[in-house]
Length: 246
Image (tube, rainbow, N blue to C red):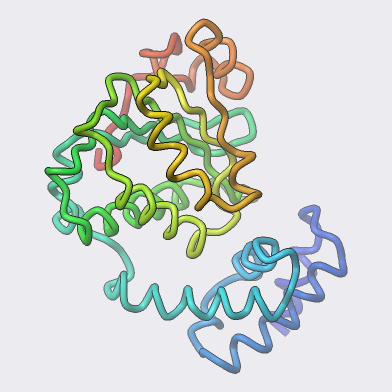
């Protein structure tokens, strides 16, 4: 009966009835394969379904892979600050208010990431740490976050294709339908060489979520999605940057 209540209440959020019926069918299947599936809500199952164009078989395969990955990658249920201290010390990731749709905002500084200073396993943990933090800040009824990716000053020492692809894999495979939009700002010409390498690995739905912003239109573009009192002061808003581990 509890599942029926959850199903009917979830039905009111904008998803159509046929979609929720597929959620119910997928739930029965994945719970039979892995009891851990009983701990997730219908919205998570729906995100995996949507990521696979409502194909129950493909979505179930993706979701069961996620459950297996989560047990291995996050055995304690969360990533502690101590497990990613080297990444945190670089002060390259901030959590910053909410946009006009209520989506939490992340600000990442690509010029503060150095391939020579990172250990790949720790970096992967850091990606999970960041994504979990973003998701935990979502208000009720919101499932997505947005990001401002500031690559001012980015150069060869910041280029780290292995790390970029690792982050992309984690986000696309284990946090589907969580990304709302990424504003790429202060983009130097050199960065586009790395972008051309990474771009083919981005799925088609995600590609549409990356927006390159000209410097001359920076404030107006950001203000179209983010109120001034939620926008970082360094971009003309009124909010001080808040480190992700604050």
